[in-house]
Image (cartoon, rainbow, N blue to C red; front, side):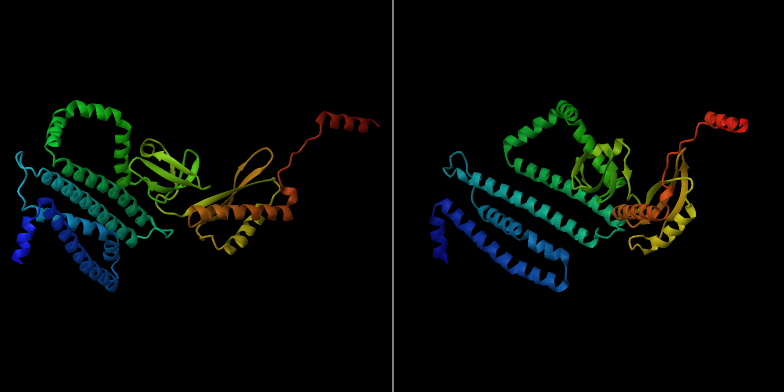
Length: 370
């Protein structure tokens, strides 16, 4: 053993560094091959979604993080180079390995954050129709997850830059000029900062949430994604509408699922004054309970307006969500139009032409004279 140690010590420094790096790879491989199968078996036995997701996502990150940590630990016994030392690459290699260590530390933190977020999504499933509480939590989670990733990136980048003396000097100069630079950056990024702050407000006050049904700029759609600066809406015809976050703070819009997903739909019918409204009311009472998508909350038939040639009948129906309500409105409208055509065809809106009163009076006078 002593002979092996003497042999290693007699080799060039870069060879010793390579050997220790190989040892670090070997030890990291052994640790990962032992620990992660145990964690995987434990996750299956306990049916832990979090542990199973952690094992699947972080295996490679942990391997490289452990490898570079062991490498730095082994290389710590080497003397630092100096101006007289011909081994100039020692500090450079240390900085490279330390940089990779910080990078994989950041990757591990981001993946761990994603595992925590996936666990919350697993616990709060938003697939159900009455999912207000779940959508509240998932909306906040999506925003917090992105903010956490940005913070991790900034911290890791700072740790990498602080390795270099020139970067420390640059950071000091940047801090001293932060007054002027901050004003310039603030003016240039005013809208971006406003959207970022609007994102915080939306995430926690929640005028909109994921999967909310909205009408924005006359377009109906669902909130598909909320990023740091904009909202993606999936419109009814599969188009995507991109709306800045600040829009939802400064402008009025309709949220059809703000408190719940249940909606009331309106069907308007235009008929002649001779139309029997009670007959229509009886038909709605008979037909609507036969529809499985009606939620039995609202059922109403009322005359809401009249004009010089027709009266307007409003039929109200209700369903569990916006899409189902739209389908029920279409079915109701189609059925009632067909029913009126079959039973009261003469009661559709008509244009009446009154006879000329003067001509009628003249005709009556002539008849009397005769």
